Image 1: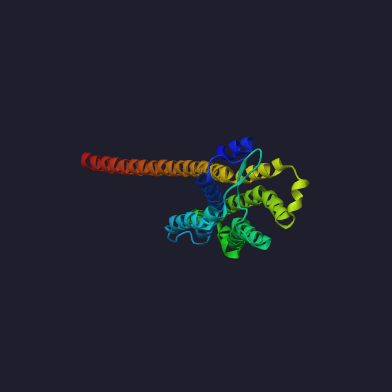
Image 2 (image 1 turned 45 degrees about the horizontal axis):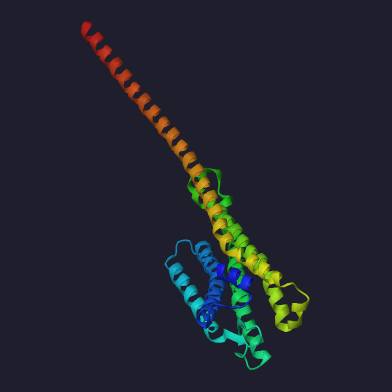
Length: 284
């Protein structure tokens, strides 16, 4: 965050009122987008596991809705934040919300609303999605394919792989949920402490809030890394299965060719024997 880094160096705000409002709007919009995108991923995983043959066109609509909702929910920042200049021997300008709320409870209500939209709502939706995935994976119908007779192994192989694929999707979903909770919980706990007890600023170093916020932002790059590792694992497994099936197919073709060669040899042998018998009868 280069603007915040320079802001920490200068302490006061030197970029003007429009830049103040724009930066705070973009900051909250980025936070909303980072919170809503894992929700879109969870909804997409739920649809892929519960309805594997259903239409998948809803993913783009959900993604567009997440960005639109992030934009709309961040709009109040443009009106709440502004620059305040303090006169004195050393003039000081800061980008704050001072004067935007008429009472302390209004500011606390707004902060709690952002907390619910940024943390509680995504956490609730992802928990519901992944709980449904867990129930689907652990249901008896999912394990039914594992009880196939030995003679039906070839026909049921694709069905037997389905629970394995769902378990992989479940592990990935739980990892995404766990990283979201671990990355953002410390930051929001500190925020709740401040909203209900502003005097905590005298007990906590100012750098702690920046450190926890940066730690929370790690959730955004961790999700693509998890999906990349999951995709590579699935691709490697798919290649192994393809090579096994090609070997089985190759051995089956070799066996078929050998059988055809044996049949041809039998036909030629019978024809030669019949011809020899006819020659013998003619000679006699």
